[in-house]
Image 1 (tube, one colour):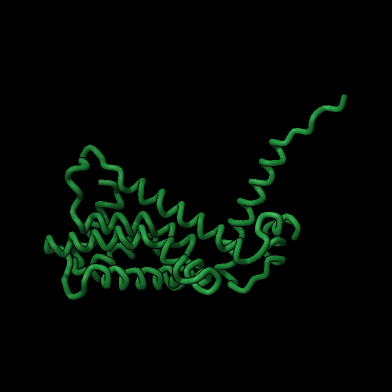
Image 2: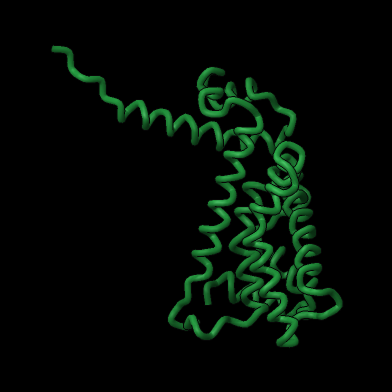
Length: 215
């Protein structure tokens, strides 16, 4: 009697191919938004049939990247929201620290998925982009609202409008990194964000240094 074919290695190989295709797509789409799926397949080291087996078209590939970005965004936010002994759940940290912590934590996520924002608006629609970013936008708006109420941030703009302005600035800074005009691990962006929200520069630098050091 012939032995049954082991299916687990095949499934494992399929998952590996899918992950490699997505990782390649994140990199290559950032370099060339017009890259074809055939070119992506070659870059990922898989045959065309394998890529199309996972993603039958460009929209399917971008939707998979969008879902991956959404999951990463939510998990990063959840990890950053866990209270510590020094910051019990009943006593939220000062708004300036919360905003700095958010920017530093989200910088790698934004760097990884920034190409999605321009691509998804065209391929998947602005509503899908808004859905992906909604948790982050809501969190920042809440932090800004609290900071304005506490007198930490300026009140020249309402929280939602200020959040949108800061988002645009951060995306521009990420693009500057992408083209080699800026080197940053997120700390410089966090300082600029605090300053734009109304925190004096010296205080902004001190807050970001504390957050980055984990103190």
